[in-house]
Image (tube, rainbow, N blue to C red; front, top):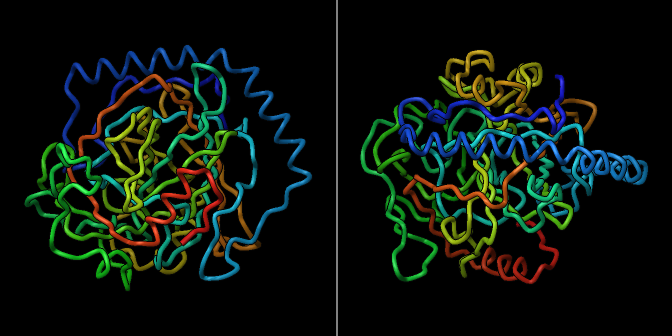
Length: 381
């Protein structure tokens, strides 16, 4: 995979739905606004070349002193320092600004390990965030990600979506982070699934603009954490599976001036969304992963990167939305490490369309949220 420098960044000329069948198109005015903002961001990024070179020099100086840590030492992983403490030059890319897709859930958990009990190849994502206005790493930005599990299912959503009402509306006036989640399942009953569901999302369902029908209060393969002062955050999950119509991908959203509720969840509408995008993996890596169990249990028709219209547009005109991947061990089953850096405009502001909300009252995550606010090291759940 050929990696592109920051100077080569340009953003796609048009934005479309993030998933087939359930995602409303942006209005012409919003599309034009995002195109203009993307063009300005591309121009701003050009002045950051020297800053990127400096990041490279720092990374090389530290690389000899850093050793790859073993991430599977026990069933419980800890929030530890990223493999590299500075932004990596050769993975500085940008993903075009798109809407968040129908399978987003507002107010997700604050954590670095999103795996829960999901089976699959461990996936460590080393994510850097750079402010193209200043050419400096963007510290204390909340990086949120969400993706399908090994068999192509998003937590909270049916494997055979067929329409119907969406989740609760955003809270109004009370300042609550929870909104009104559906009552079909409690957090304690479904937040940690006992098995991997098979099949993949079908039609988009209802639930308002940009929302599929939300069915369960599940949290696997969702969440996020804040970047360090060096603009880096490390998130752990499983390598995403595929479902019909989309190549494997990871959604991301970057928040500034973020807020954490008393129940330990992100207040999605409490801060400012400065970036929405998607990341992808090279097909040669997908081939290796999908030859393993439980990915072999996926009954969906696989969509290749070359067949994904969203990827085609996100990766157009020299843009690069691919993780730079390497093995964590001797064999791919031991895990994959992926580096990527987002160039964001910290002055930008984007709107979340999805109206589905997660509600958590877990006491452990409440304690975690308070320690995050005070900047302490937080042990992963």
